[in-house]
Image (cartoon, rainbow, N blue to C red; front, side, top):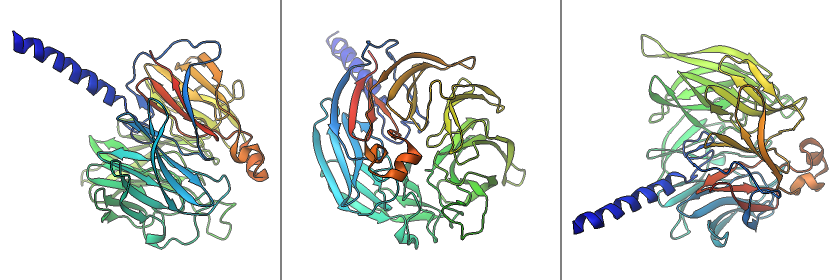
Length: 445
């Protein structure tokens, strides 16, 4: 009986610890890289002034989001005059625990940070504005290895919007897109930085990060490549973009779809289930659904199921819930707001500008969508194919950065706020980054 009395609490404790860790947000778009959290107990109502802000900390301007693991937060911050800085904060207080910076000066339109780190084991990995890929030991706070995904493969002048890659860990590999002249997607040994495989250059520049989709129960790495930018590259032949499926362990190209018409691709591809891949954008084409089939000889084919400009997302992949997709669709010429689309490509509803959603971030948790609108408002939304169902909202984010007039062209094109960073959700707390601060907000019981 004594053993039993000791054993039961230990089991309960281990279960509780496992549940806490399961709610970590260790990479771009969360644990499964699909903007979905296992968090339960999301608050169904907020006080009049909005959910409780537990703490805030000052950050530089930019668009890169945080990650959270084991009670710590990691954010790749940036000062364009100096370089990139990996910052580590205590989750409970916001206290900065350590930082590691390196020289990487330079600026582009919409300056500042633009990528999300990934934490794996004892290391945090990040890719900076100039293509600097770092593996940093989270215990010693020193780099284990570093490469440059752009200059190492013949890259010279940076892409128009710099390097925006969010690294992907797949087993022992760190997978990231280079799109320099001598490489497309590259896989490094995550512990040593040695190159395990690389594909040839896949076409035009891309700002989309790799994703993983299931095709016949096997993982494929999927990369989205832009069509030619008619404004930034008038001198180049105007070609369509690609969606490419890659074998994760070898880098072998398994299939391609060559009719993608978005000239600045940012969102990653979405696993739509049943061997289907959804790709979205915001310049100017909105969406295409592809079906991938394995042929009798073992090869794969990619077939377009539908393509139209009534659904898409400028900066993030859509959320998939109960057979429906939800995305914030804006282009340079239209504002459709939050839009719901079914599996066949039929639009169920769109908010347009009432309310407006433009380049914000969204997370699905406990059957609800938590969303920023790209400006100042945080929303709690019940996803439904019948209509837009907001539950609560609060103005929490501030103006700042290039949108506040520091860069007239960026302000005119991107608006006054530009709060476009991806969100993170861990242990009932939402991490939101605007152009001035990183804030921790209580959203669950």
